[in-house]
Every structure is written in C-alpha cells, then in structure tokens.
Image 1 (tube, rainbow, N blue to C red):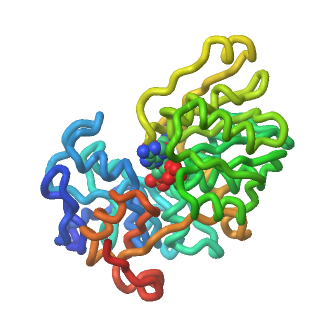
Image 2: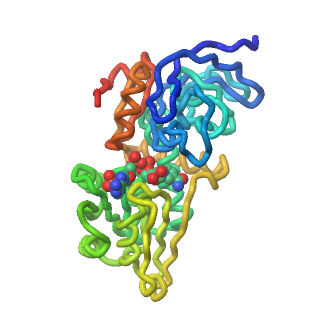
Amino acid sequence: MTTATPVRAALVTQYGEPPVLGTRDLPHPGPGQCRVRVTAAPVVPLDLLCASGESYFGHPALPYVPGVQGVGVVERGDTLPDGTRVWFNTDAGMRPGDGSHAEAAVVAEAETVSVPDDVPDSLAAALGLSAVAAWMALTWRGALEPGEGVLVLGAGGVVGQVAVQAAVALGAGQVIAATRRTSARETALARGATSVVDLSGAGAVELAARMLAAADGNIHLVIDPVCGEAATAALQVLADGGRLVHLGASGGPIASFSSAAVRSKSLDVRGYTNNSLSPEQRAEALSRVFALAGAGHCDVKHHVVPLDHVADAWRLAAQGEERVVVVPTGTSDSATVPSEQP
Ligand SMILES: NC(=O)c1ccc[n+]([C@@H]2O[C@H](COP(=O)([O-])OP(=O)(O)OC[C@H]3O[C@@H](n4cnc5c(N)ncnc54)[C@H](OP(=O)(O)O)[C@@H]3O)[C@@H](O)[C@H]2O)c1
C-alpha cells in the first residue's frame, strides 16, 4: 500500500501570515522513515522566520506544513517499533517537505530521539532544540567545570531557562540569571539560580555594574542567546580566561568588546549553532536534558494550544512571552490544558 493518507494539518499559504488549518496528503514512509502520530509540536522562532519567506534558507514553496520539530508516537516504523515515543526534527521551511504542525508526520528514523515515560509530550516539545543549544553551549562550547561561575543572558527564554537549570545540575559554583522579565527572575531563583540581574532599561555600562553587583566571585562562563548591550556588558565582567558562548541575537545583531578587557584577560568568544551537531550529538544532548526533566530538575514554561487554533498559536508565539506548543485535539495535553486566546 503506497497511497498517501490525508491528515489535518496547519498550512502556510502566505509568507508572513499565520498558517490555516487544512488537509494534507501524508506520503507513505519510505526506507529509513517512519510515520509519527504527532502529540505535541512547538512554535519556535525558526518556524516564524521560515514562514516569513525572508530566511536565509530562501522562500519555501507554498503551501507547506510548518514545524521544525515535534513529539509523537511511531505508528508505522521501518526499524523503530510501533508505539515508541519519540522527539523528531524536520526541514520544514528550510528544504522541501512538511513539518510537525499536523496530526501526523513522516520523518527519518535517524533523526528521532526516544522520549522517556516521565517527560510529558508538551514539555518534551517545549524543550527540543532550544534545550539542545543550552546544553551544548554549557558543556561542549562552554566546557563548564564544576564550581565555575555562570552568567545566563536572556534567562526568561527557553534557551536561558534550560541553561540556568542545567548549570545548577552540572555543579556550577554560582548561576546568575539575567533577564528583562520580573517573573522570569523569580522563576530562576526558585529553580536554583544564586542571583539575578534585571536586563531592562539600561545600556552596557549600567548592565555591567548590575552584573558585578549580582556576582559572588568570578564569572567564568557567559551563555549568550541575546547579543546587543547585554553581551557587550557581559564581556566586561568575565574573569581572566573567561568564555562567552554566543548562540543568538534576539536583543540585537551587534555586540562590541573593549579591547583592554578581551586582551588583558585573554577572553574567549565562541560561536555556537545546533547545525554543526551530528544526529548522535544532538540525541545525546537531548537525552541528557530529558533525564534532568524526568527527575524534576528541568522545566520550561509553555503554553498549550490545540491544532484547531493553530493561527492563534502562531500569533501568541510571535509575542514571545512563553513557548507555545501545538497539540492535535484529542491528545492528553490538549484535553487538560485549555487554550488562551492572545
Ligand atoms: N544557535 C543555535 O543553535 C540556537 C538554537 C536555539 C535558539 N537559538 C537562538 O537563541 C535565541 C533564544 O532562543 P529561545 O528558544 O530561548 O527563544 P525564546 O524562548 O523565544 O526566548 C526569547 C529570548 O530572547 C530574549 N529577547 C527577546 N527580545 C529581546 C530584546 N529586545 N532584548 C533583549 N532580549 C530579548 C529574551 O530575553 P528575556 O529573558 O529578557 O525575555 C529571551 O531570552 C533566539 O535568538 C534563537 O534564534 C539559537
């Protein structure tokens, strides 16, 4: 049987507009592929960027099903047993092919990662690639050693939330959570951050003063998904031999550094992208974060919206307050967590 199966799906039909709910023919999985019944799929900044038609990947052909990652249950596996709970990623919006914002998806088995029973679908989806970036920025690019001081910029975002909790779990000596949001600072302290910094309403000089005031001893590592004034300030407060791992620019595309600070302290600025990871590295990172989450040591705030209201989900995601997770109606998450209209 090789015929396509119609499934309910979000469809991007115009660049820059939220998707509409429609029907899409799902192809039969080929060798090395499986069909996954989707239970949760996040709306991430990359989804919005690709659907804008202005990403560096070019214009995706319309219509297409968005969603670069998701969580679900294998229904028709090649080598994976049916019933396996998996996280998966897709190339939706970057290359031809459909994504995760649908009732089902056909994905490469090599791109899947097993999800432990003690991690709910919506949390696994909310963590996803942002959690991979946070984990690898700390452990691989950041080479965090137990006892070192860590400063996390943008601690209210998913990368930042995971970085704070992972740094605590990895035995950092101090974890300073820096974010513009009051509620995020409170959450970070409740999750083990040792101090917090308000990143709002100030330039780099004032932000650096706030960072130093919050630090209790040396800051050895900065996790930077923000760039802009916050990163400029963070480069001023690093200790001798300190590292700044830069992985995003949500606060602006440019940060500057003081020659004296970088030179005199032999500072190290390191870039990071998930795209440089092998599937094995990505799976290892995600498995480590899922293990933390299952043990109750890694959570991210997220908001669940049924697939029926996918346009609302995208509008909410564009506001950037909280990670939005789309769930096909009928999954356990959609039954228990009501949609909030933006
Ligand atoms: N390199 C990679 O492989 C990789 C992987 C995943 C994500 N990223 C990038 O990392 C960044 C964060 O991703 P995420 O998943 O955590 O996104 P998210 O959950 O949507 O969080 C948004 C983040 O951006 C910050 N932010 C937004 N607008 C800002 C502004 N005007 N000034 C300062 N900060 C601002 C927020 O800081 P507050 O805490 O102050 O609200 C928060 O940290 C994005 O740029 C994303 O593209 C990179």
